[in-house]
Length: 291
Image (cartoon, rainbow, N blue to C red; front, side, top):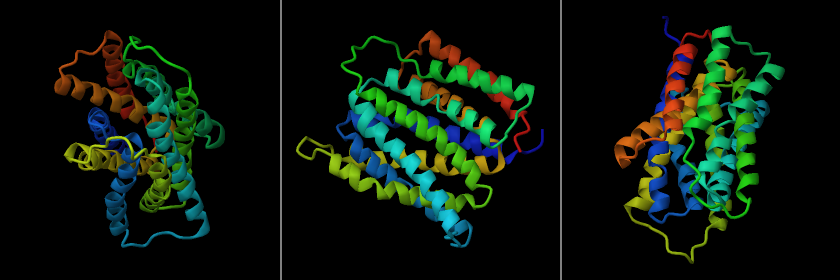
């Protein structure tokens, strides 16, 4: 099988996002609020953004088309992250929120087929469908918690929609922009929304400022940021209808596997089923011609 850049970058993204998912809850559990997690997430995008600019000799594209695409992509991503960290998770259980959010590739696929005219082979479609089935299974955490109110639902739906649309704009931008420029504007947008997160933070409540607070948060979120840069590269070389479901299906599988090792938790049968489906999906999509 010949080397496929889109697949290499997509798998790097899933690896980093998978590890990020396994450790992302540690700072919050230690008493570091979600709004400040967002702030440090935005700061963690700076090193990969600078590394990307160095790769292209600091030649940032700054025409109006590039700025427009970059800021749209960045605001969609950052706005979704802010809604997730400060809205959805603050008001609802993860076992209901993440199955909704992880289905964002459905939005990406629908828009890509209608507006980008992307197509996949029969084998590719089977892989995409299996990935979409696996995503909610991998997010399953049981229903042994009581839920008060539905305030979390509109925030979860916002993330579901904007992250699905964001992947489409990444693909569109890659037709005229360098991936490194796209990511720079993603970083810039994230930092632009950081003051909103600071304003939303209740500093009267106890906050963990030790290693398990800002320091651990930064290093964990850096994994997320590097993965985000790689998915921009993946969408430069590959179809959005293939890259999006692949990354969203495999990353949770890595998270579950690491959680099993770190926390000695045996996954539910539903989750194990999702892991097996993800493996099948990866094999099918790996042989898909996504150029």
